[in-house]
Length: 141
Ligand SMILES: [Zn+2]
Image 1 (cartoon, rainbow, N blue to C red):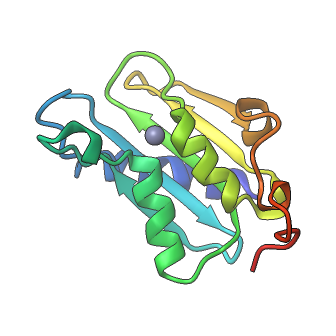
Image 2: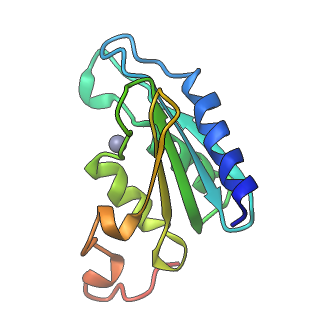
């Protein structure tokens, strides 16, 4: 993954943040995922007056990628309008894990100030629950 591709991924996450629908929390988040074939898919958080129906930006981006046929994601960039680095929540970490290319993913966590922290999904979600943890599901499609 080139430095230029990483910068594009971060820029697309920032751009996606503009679409956030966050009238309740006012916490605007954008995410962009990089599929193994080089395609980038984006998402923003979409809140709902029935709070539990809210969906995070990362999951919107992943679900968009999967709906388009992607199954292997190599990197994700997440950014918000808050001052600190924007980490994926626990649910999103699990969803990202399902589609981590070769079991790993680079994670870029951005902030409103333009600082980016780089980590990996295995650091954020050690011992992730996998299909292989279920009897009879050693391989996923
Ligand atoms: Zn989340």
